[in-house]
Image (cartoon, rainbow, N blue to C red; front, side, top):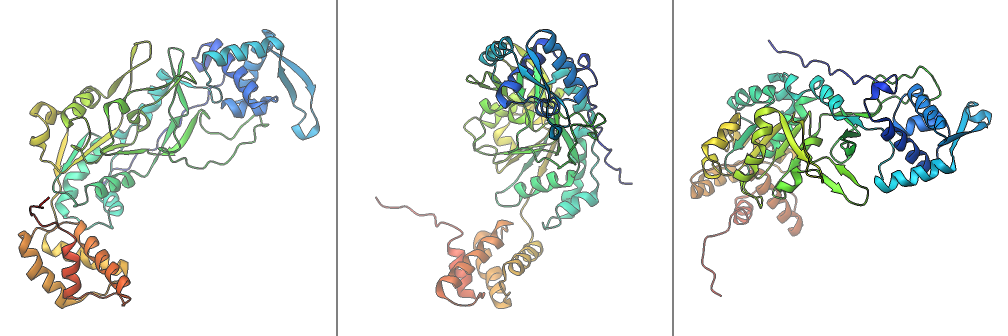
Length: 435
């Protein structure tokens, strides 16, 4: 019986300042910096800017007023809903400038790391149960052997690390993307988190795909927002890296100008998938990369460091997929392989599946099939490479024939001669070049 993916619980909105679990001075300074930088003066605008409920924002504004950092400007016009306006006092401006000198961060109030940990548990990737039907739907455009899903399904549902290996050009990257599409639900990504008084930005529009929400009316005391506005409701994130991946990309990124931190890639991928494509092509060795992941993979926590040298733990709740063209024994020792929970070999297609892929690609690209040309390909060409088929080859051969037809100014067609010309570009002859 297929189990359904449980509904992710949304982070509840704070109702008082004390529930925020942030230092009062930090909250006050972010309020002042936001008012200074965004030139907001109504509580509804400020509430939107710092992503807090109206009542909590008013409590924070009142605290700043008591400290003579804000002052009321009187009732504004009717277009503003007759809200009271506020502005920084001279003391407030001085404090805002001083706070900006310490950290340029302003805007959405950060989520304390301990509070974020609880949300990570509520939306853990390991809570997902992916059915065979979901995987088939997500990968319906791929021609895969049935046995492959027998291995992929348990691996994805476990939310543990996966190593996919095999010869190049057989869809390891496409399968990784299909796994991502099969997840299909949502998570809540904090705009920023706080640890030890430091702000770490997490939400990244390049990595995260926000799900549009019905806008709130900030003037209403009872807001329709069903979750903490410091989070963004997103599709489960997917981070894809390849040969460019380096160990430094897995550390906090410090911005010395803004004096804030940016979350590393694996923290941005929390609740989703981290794909390491082309493993073995990076500057660092695969063994060095896996050594960096040993603690996260085994203990579901990662260790990050601040500029001060202080180390701290963050959640590691990510389905890590390693994809390589190398045999695992060539790039890992046995201790490293033991840490990777699932190892799945992705082989090339057999002749039957190769022909299915070829027909699908030809139909999609408008190339008419020709039986004598296909027989020529199977009987004359593939024996020269020991009848080793790969998933990329139909696309390559058909694209080559299309390019030739367009250059020659003839309708798309498939002939043995065009097969020969396309084949010549798929491989480079092993020969010595005289210099």
